[in-house]
Amino acid sequence: MTVALVRAVIGSPWQVLSAPRRESSRGKLGTGISPFNSVIREEGQLMVQINRRSALSLGLTATALSLAAPAFAQAPQGVSRQSWGKRESMIPGYKSVSMRDVIYQPGAKTSNPSMPNDMVCHVPEGELRIKQSDGPEFIAKKGDVWTCRKGIGEDLENIGSTVAIMRIIDLIPA
Image (tube, rainbow, N blue to C red; front, top):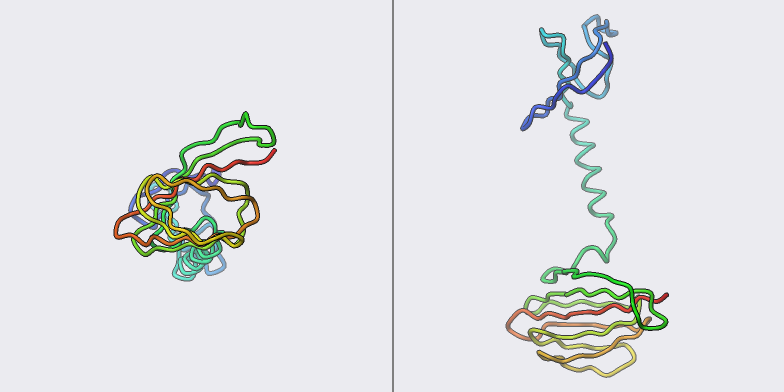
């Protein structure tokens, strides 16, 4: 008999495996699968349970991976992102265009030290204070539009009492 996953019991740390029986170094039946504790059921199936050390190391690994996620993928508190789509561009010099929204709760702020590409930005809702690194500080209200070129920095803050949305059309170079 070979080791094969038969079924996983939902809501339990147990996995049921079909495996050959053999003597372990302690004289008990088991498969030598480490770092798991093994229990043989009467049907000849092996139940494997994760021990505390394995559970702790899996938990620490998951935590480390979540903390190591790229900063651009994690929005600051009070800020969320929504992508709307992407398609090929008919504008010379640009391979494609995409559209996304950045939603700011009242008082939420972001800072982008360098734009990755040229953009056209619009505020369909709310009021944002915009400070571009090589331009003036201004307040964009509902309906306002502005542009950003690749490489400039920009700080934004929702200064209103309601949600503000910045709609961004990314112009992605060829």
